[in-house]
Length: 56
Image 1 (cartoon, rainbow, N blue to C red):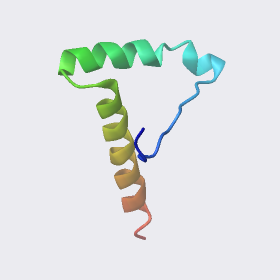
Image 2: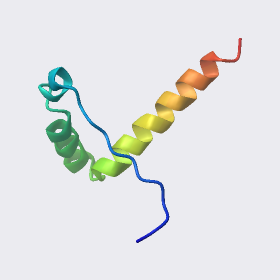
Image 3: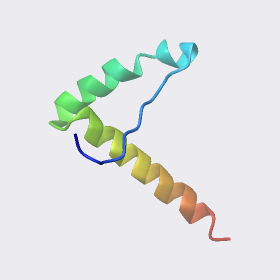
Image 4: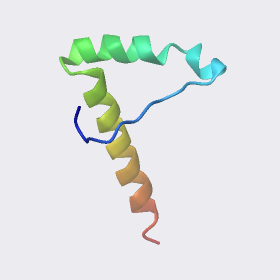
């Protein structure tokens, strides 16, 4: 087992009803990427966007 950080994501009942995992799996297949790649990319983009807002 590697020493890479591990992140688990839990969806509230109302968010789970939106079927995010199934939607990610479908998008990953369409984009020929892994679900992990899509999630990491989304997190990195979110962090960059939010951190840029802190430059006031």
